[in-house]
Length: 70
Image (cartoon, rainbow, N blue to C red):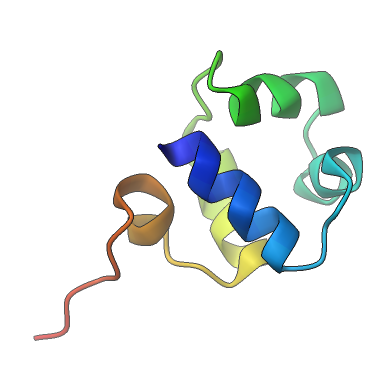
């Protein structure tokens, strides 16, 4: 599910090409494609940077839920 949320967030942010997004993340495009395909674990840095680029929370990308407010 992470891979689906990552792809949907990337596209919703205007990154229609995965290679452009990978470049802005500072990740090799092939490695990024594997993450988005769900065949490679993203690693914490990629999750954090992807959250920043897509204006999503890491909680949302990882779990599908918005961070709780206390």
